[in-house]
Image 1 (cartoon, rainbow, N blue to C red):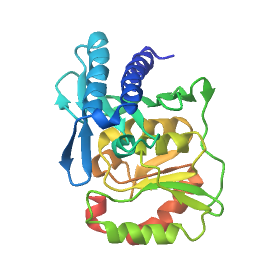
Image 2 (spheres, rainbow, N blue to C red):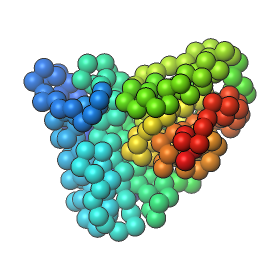
Image 3 (cartoon, helix red, strand yellow):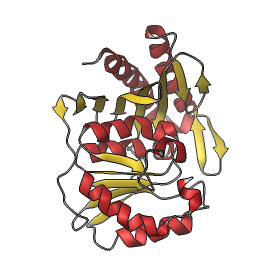
Image 4 (cartoon, rainbow, N blue to C red):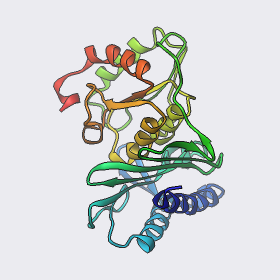
Length: 265
């Protein structure tokens, strides 16, 4: 295993241990509002601190971009961290959340780790080396079109500027698919696309730490990840489509008529 993947896995497991321990004491956690429908708990912060400590111990000169503590200066190596993707699920005791850790080198994704501590599923990827779930190689699904496809999505819950556009996309995509799921953790949505559990996924308004690790998982599993207009700027725009190549193209055809300039800017 790539040594940087090994370190990211170690950090993810440490964070996961803290989260599962906190899951049994949700009533005692301190929770604060970051914004409308956006929360952070002491579990998020403790998990992030644990991740940063592991990474700093091994790579003290690397930069860090973390959801709760923001950007930490460093060299051309930047770790992108979401210590708890699916905080709302977590705070309700809904057991679907993950730790997400990615590494970018000069802006290019190199390492991705998504860890589900409840199911003890560790999704890992290294550029050019494929993607794994625990010790098993991952491949995206082989479905050739939207007929019978199972898609994942995230319904807007903080920024409602594009709700009308999103509902148009949803209405279009729901026609031919066998179902659309909104589990509440984008990192796991990407991981499930990489594992073939979902055929495709799209969402608007994500942050880089929501997507970085998962996007590499999908690409290393043979899938395609782009922004909502089919370009490469998903980490900048926050709007993303992922899936196997044929599903991605089919989703894109359905989504394009519902875009405006603000969604692709």
